[in-house]
Image (cartoon, rainbow, N blue to C red; front, top):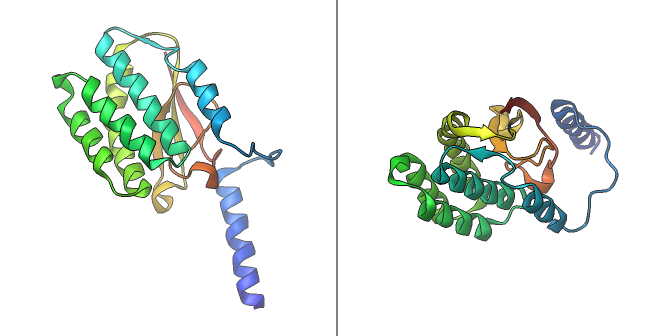
Length: 175
C-alpha cells in the first residue's frame, strides 16, 4: 500500500511540475463561462479573405468543444468547418471530416493536432489585424506535446479538457 501511495504522490508531483501550473482558486463548476468567454472574444483577429475568417471561427468552435470534452459538439463544429471552407483547403477538409466521424474524443483530439499543423500557416499567412496565439501543452500525446491556435492568451487546453485545463503556454503571438 505504501508503494502505491508513494507512486501516486510521485506522479502527481511530476504532472504538476511538468505543466508548472500555479495553485488555482476552485474552477467554476460549470464549463459554460468558457463558452461565453470564447464567444465574446472569438474572431477578434481579422484575415485577408472571408474563407480564412470562416475557417478560423470554426476552428475556434472545435477547440472550445474539445476543451469542454464535448465530442458531439466537436463533431458538429468539424462538420460546420468542412461545410464552410473553400476547395483550396482539401487537406483541412479531410481532417475536419475525419474529426466529425471519430468515435471518441481522444481520437478527435489526435486529429485536431494534425488539423492545427495544417491551419497554422493559413492563419499566419492571412492575418490582417488583431492577435492570435500559438499555444503548447508538453503533456499531450504521452509527453510528445501538442500545439493549438487560440483567439485568447489564456490557456484552455483542448487535449486534456478539465483534467488539466490550464496546462500549457503561449509559444508565439501572431499578428
